[in-house]
Length: 164
Length: 102
Image (tube, rainbow over all chains, first blue to last red):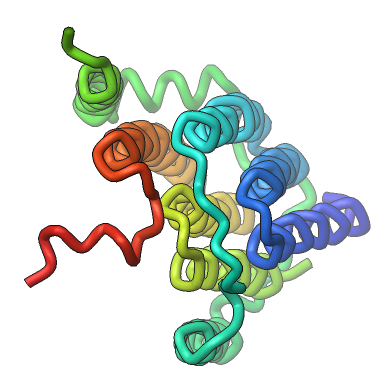
């Protein structure tokens, strides 16, 4: 697992996420978020989970990102002048998020069982192995996920369609 | 590259997503924050899969796949609700949607 590209991809993800947090125009924020989803997919590919990386790029950056931009077109937000990162609400949110981050980071840094380095070769994750796991031992969650996706998408389309 | 660095990165991404969800006024961008939080959680699963030497750890990838599918479905439904909210009140500012407020 080469070190420099993984660190670079992590920095790209964080930069895209930070620009999604600070940009003012909602479309810019949505596009930065789609970029960070794609960079997370590339991170998955770099970590060795290629199948999941491609699925992440297809579903998140391609699907969810485009869906968000479409909804920003259908339901355009009215930009009032107020900055979202100003005011007592933003300070309180920032303090809460900082507290949560410090708590989780302390837990991670203080558990010795997590200070392990990567094996040279990724564990078994071929598409055949994932497919066999899905169909053999995780068949019920697979079917439930299929039903859930169908119901959610039909429900979303029915919700939005206008009745004459 | 230790596991701790990747976990810290995923916790940082989660915190940035939480910050987006807490500070933005537009409902669509709150959903963007939620999706970033879910992406951070998926990175956690993949990190634990990559740094383990147990062959049954492929369940991490399978679970991340299910989490991805569920979050895509939830994003679709949430965005449909936002479109309806806009049709009702021509405004997707979450502070203005106070019809059901007690």
